[in-house]
Length: 304
Image 1 (tube, rainbow, N blue to C red):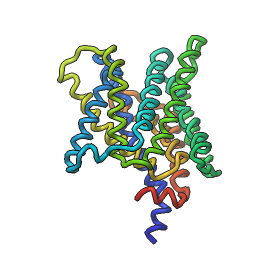
Image 2: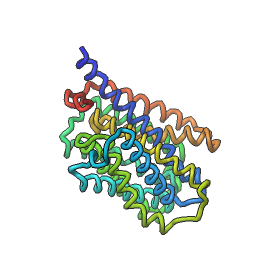
Image 3: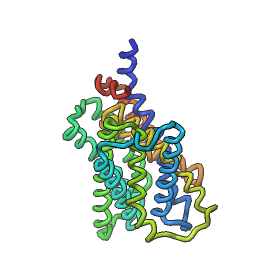
Image 4: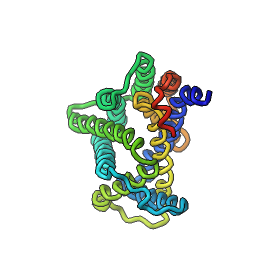
């Protein structure tokens, strides 16, 4: 009976974990807007990785274990995962600065379109008709939100290069998602988090210093708090990716648009349009369709 319950609920549990992670990451994605012109985006992200790594070291100390206990046999894979994530983020940051941000965001969401074929080709995952219904609904909901925000209404030939870079960024993040799925089964969640934050510091150090803006410790303190939030978000995502296939958890990233709208409403007086509300409902329906798919037995065993 317990095994049957686990089989029926592992997809739903996975989606809950990833939705929680997406909600927390939405705060991090909005950090640049909260920071205004006081600090660069790269500077904020660098501070986030530093405080995240310090948070993880505290967790290791509280566990009464030495850092060597979290050594991975696949450090190169962790470095590559971090490289794909950082470079994909760079690409989307660049495109957002060089073209309308709503258009860059829409192109960045091609991440989900890329990750499903990768899951089928590389991980040999099976995508059923029910998967396709849920994925299509999630994609349609995201489309409603982006159209309601005016995506591509002012697209110009000058945007072709940044648009191409945005698509590249989406592809890089899809590869990172694939590697998260693989590494989440190979190592403990805390090991995965330690490596990604360590390599994130290394990869962002020089770009952050090149764009560094002088700021007091009190001004940087709120962004240092992003580290623990990011660690919690990363943990949720890793847990979710352990429990279900990419065809299930990949489309959950569209929920970011919903959380972004909520943040805009609560903090920036951005009133959501009817299209945003309709899109949010459609994304939620797509998520329910994916959550009730009966998982494969090996997906449930990954929870152990």
